[in-house]
Length: 260
Image (cartoon, rainbow, N blue to C red):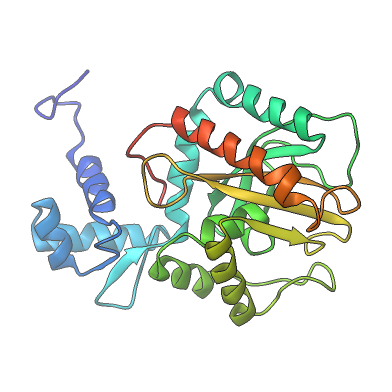
């Protein structure tokens, strides 16, 4: 392992990572001077790094203040996808799916979407496939909504500033005002459910996955035909198992780690 004094140590990368890590729940939006203070960098260096991150899409700015953009989640997904999911998380997902008799999926945010990183295999065929790597818009996904609902107001505002809401079915929520009310409801009840908004007849329910952070690092969901899984049976039949799975996976993920 090299040290900071090694000729192979690239200080510019280290400084860039320091700038990214300077943002947190108490410092969502900062000026270059604020970042410089928190990282012990000069103001000029902090400003150049922030502008570079903005050019790459990882930071957004109004010209004075800077904040992390949803694309920063790509870095978190790269980390989680590099874990030995098949050995650590996949058995938990498989067991949950078999017990519920529905597809069980673990998802993380990936830009404006959620991406499936693990899913259970069941004999029944449903029209929507949730194989690992599947992307879907976060605003129309139960996993996406339960993740978004538990972010800071500043993060959600940044998300809405970029998202374009497409209509998939007659049931799809397509206005930001209505979706924000739905996110408030999801936050209060602790889970998200989506009925026929991505595809008619498809019902999904999701709960957040936490480590020791106050914001979710991922989400776990059940999805299937609305004739089998719906508002009338999720609280007794599906949610208890989802919360158990979420707690178990959260215990296996690194502590003090957040993708946000």
